[in-house]
Length: 512
Image (cartoon, rainbow, N blue to C red; front, side):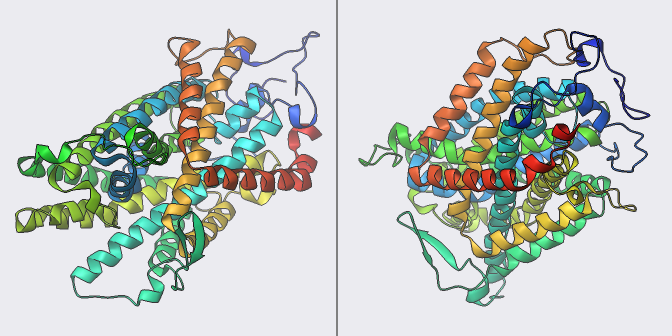
């Protein structure tokens, strides 16, 4: 049947996926190759669910743009831009942002088509389920868990660095043992740092998770205010710093390679682009909110494009200003923008304080959106039976997946408190790139299997756009260090064990 529950969205004939006998096809194969029909996905997002497991539609275009910008303009801007300039790309870190944004644009065009066709929670996980089967969907869902959980922890670590530095400037010094992770990365090896716990990172993570559990509408309102102030402050800093730019600091724009892959030169620019791709996790977050958005077929594609345009302008502007007012070799610090302002002495003191305050409040909005995306991935996988059904349980008062929120908050807090920023950043980037590549390939598949399905947005220049998106994503993945690939392989192996032990046995699609 087309709409298994009262209130399910009406289906176009092309979405019914009827078999040769005219009956609705529940799945096209068994086990890990089972495809989840689009009709079943649309039934999942019915607005009238008698079992109370649906999410409320409370978000509009402005909210989604706020979530996209709020998530993307964060750690990569305030924290990672400096180290990537100092260690890999030099002033060409601005070019690294452009390269990462081009790969993101190609993938975003593919995301937009999927979102206009299947506006459900789950993002790349749900899209893979409809095109490549349950096994690939699990693989991508598992990568998204890595992406969001680690990126949430990464943001919390960045927030901790700015908060600690700001308190220090006021003469408030937290005990050194509780201001950093007990583990560190030295020459590619994980060693003990001598510290006990990054307490500020743990506390801000738990606070944000509590805010998310109180409701998406409340989270959206807080995020809109913070993002608006953040953009205004960043623009003020860029404009105010332009008169102090010394063009000679941009020469050479691409420093000569030192002889090691990824250490300046073209390979360094590519290495920085691969790591800074983490900045664009926010666009994936937009597509996880399809079930909570009014008119998602139109709203999500628009939000994706507008958010990307805003973020690219801000990233490139800040990168050029930073490397134009300070020697890029001095920017490998926890608060690189503030460090660049310090190089100009009292003339930019106001901007330094502005950046510190904006970073402290602005990174909260990044953390909020990142954890929100993680919770929605848990919700989608719990709904499908690949994770315990408690993850899809909705709080009767707040109408949010409260169990998933609690697990996400605690998990992200543990990683934020124990692991260093440079270990998590590469993992987030490679997981994000893999998910983007699969979504891009999925558009090609769905155009062939469901060519007549109604699409409010169609990816332009087919089939070249998704093919280029896949190639761009794998090129950036290839530029990352080999130990990042090893960690990804270990994470995927762990995911395979979890799927075999639980997901495969409890899949609702296989039981249908």
